[in-house]
Image (cartoon, rainbow, N blue to C red):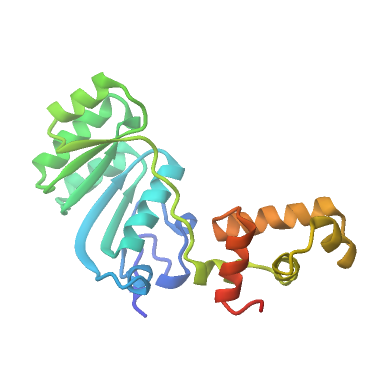
Length: 222
């Protein structure tokens, strides 16, 4: 397993890092493990994610790392992007959010001038003036909308389940109702419903049959 280097100086194993572990600005490398699990090759490229929004920034960073991108640079402020430009750091793709406001067009122009091969504007809203300004500044294109959270891979997601949640899933696999499961485990039906909600969030699906199938494939229940 390759290691990951952080500008913040805190080492981590690639398979253990979550989006919430990413510092506000830094370079993240060697995180091809998720892509390798899916049979995808590592893509040797440097990609910048410049976005003041924490959630969208983390989703984009996780998605790029999971797809096999070898280096992801994360910046949450315009000043951090300016610092990268001043240092002459360049790469293959820069994703710049228009949530930076009027500053976004300048950032796009600066990145293009500093030899970033391609700059894409991220438009959280359908503001035609902002998108037009981004294109005039040199953006290669505009992506509209918010990124969709990356669902955890089943083999990683099941590791998050507690023993109680596995017990609940085993009863669900037998076709038991929430009421029956609650009585069997000396819990209320409402508590069982809460357990199922947490399981749903961890496995990325609210379908009971799908949750059971994931647990069965992982060998947690029979």
